[in-house]
Length: 242
Ligand SMILES: C[S@@+](CC[C@H](N)C(=O)[O-])C[C@H]1O[C@@H](n2cnc3c(N)ncnc32)[C@H](O)[C@@H]1O
Image (cartoon, rainbow, N blue to C red; front, side):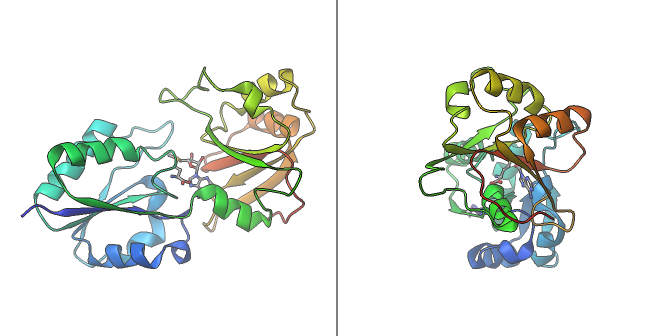
């Protein structure tokens, strides 16, 4: 009998932001393959005796290749039992979900997908700001600031990213933001556009810093720190910092 894989969105890191369905699957799993950003206290909910396998990738550190993760997932599922693949936030948002689903489909193995709270939604809630605003923020766009080589993707739609009526959230973008900000300003985005750096959201290290596009670019050109972070900019509402 082959096993069954549950892809779980772990949310930003706070175990209270797990869904009840994710918690149920975690408590019953025989093996949990987890990402770096989906580790910490959430793993405390796994069944005692379950195999806990770290497969996470982190920028600038030696990390397992995606092919290796796909193979490991297929191997665990072939052994039978309940396998959980725990991904940060929601697995379908910059989570390499598609490659892993394809590997399971090709191997003829069954799976389910349990959504999680994506980190930008948790960050906006922590900062006390809505992502959309009547009249001023009609659109939300989630964008990656790094391609697989870690560089700013060369094919970004800069006109869309410089749209002053959109709330833009950049993932994995601390290193490339100074270059991106320069390009956005050249495309007409005012340098004083409100911006926010949201680091380690949903963890005890959470830090929310309000700035402007130009101010945040200058800050990140000096120091990007080590925490996972999102960059928000656009017509952001007043909110709370911490
Ligand atoms: C591979 S992507 C995964 C995104 C995830 N699937 C989600 O829905 O949030 C990793 C990037 O997501 C962002 N991220 C994930 N969790 C975060 C958190 N708790 N705080 C801040 N940023 C986070 C960072 O930009 C990080 O580099």
